[in-house]
Image 1 (cartoon, rainbow, N blue to C red):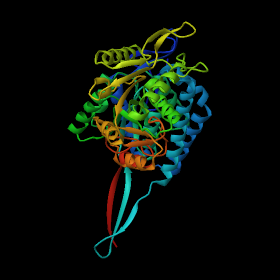
Image 2 (image 1 turned 45 degrees about the vertical axis):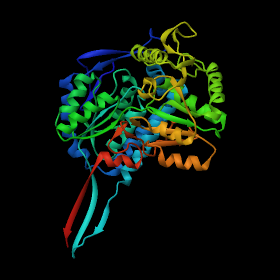
Image 3 (image 1 turned 30 degrees about the horizontal axis):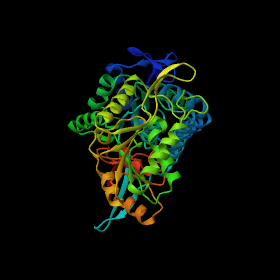
Image 4 (image 1 turned 90 degrees about the vertical axis):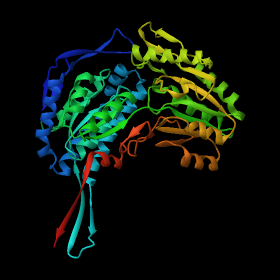
Length: 479
């Protein structure tokens, strides 16, 4: 039994959840405690009590703890990557890469704990000094998703702790294993009691308490648009700070002058890898007339070589979908695309068993062609390995189509034209823009976030994380 961490103690929950391997549904990854509302409130109270001490620790103390955690994560990346692949379904190389990213994030923010600075500004009044400094917020609630079960908790948790906040974290129900492993590492690194609390449990219970309890000063949320809107409403009602990362319907533009091999590789990686279960995945590929047919043929040919199998097996390109509900949603959208008149050019079939005969939630990646911008498969986030191709007559139309979405997280273009690349970087309505690179692939030390319906609040990651996890104080002194 994997227990919750509340006030420095491992405690049993009100219920138990079973963590199932989507590559082989007969395989039980583990049993995890489920906290109830009362335990969530206990965790918040513990964090509040710990804040007075933790908020005034030296930068060196916080550096040492975060650096130690980062070192252990990196040393155990093969083991933790295997756990991640087993519970979430992304391929083992992708999972190990995600764990390494989490370790590097902790290392980065260990350094940021030492680099928190301020300003000394001359006053307009004689004899008065002005200092501008940053201070921690207090207790931060973290609500994390299932698609990046260790990297996203890391990029929320590490800056929160680095800047002196205390934390209550609720990971996604589907993937408690990676979050528990992270909690165990931090606990053994020597965090004081109550500074970090792990409360695994249902959103309707634990999540609701985090949103409503006045002891929580801020919420950082990554998940669906609908849930994000509820988070915003609840936080606004009690004037709590909040940060949202939600959906995406990311475009990838392919121009006539693109290197075909580069364009195909970017589209396939963006749309299909990690089973398409990334908010930065590119599910709309907008292709100009001159290269359209060659591009579609090349993508369909490359798809034939993609191996769909157990996430932890060597040579697997695409692992399973995370669970039966997500698989059903993907299949529903594939059927919607057919009914809307799109051509299913390749893939789209559910696979009940992998090559070894194990039952799992497998889906062959799907490629739709001859789609139109108004189709639901081009408007709504599917969150699966589904790409739809839209024709465009030229760059101007392609850019307009790329921006024709309520989302604005990531946007990409394949081109050898410096003119078009430069124009696209400036005019793409997205928080992140990729040129001749997959839309789903970002560094850990730079800002992450989007525009429009994809994000709200300050950016995550990098030095910009301080904008959310700290508050600014201006102090005046009469000499």
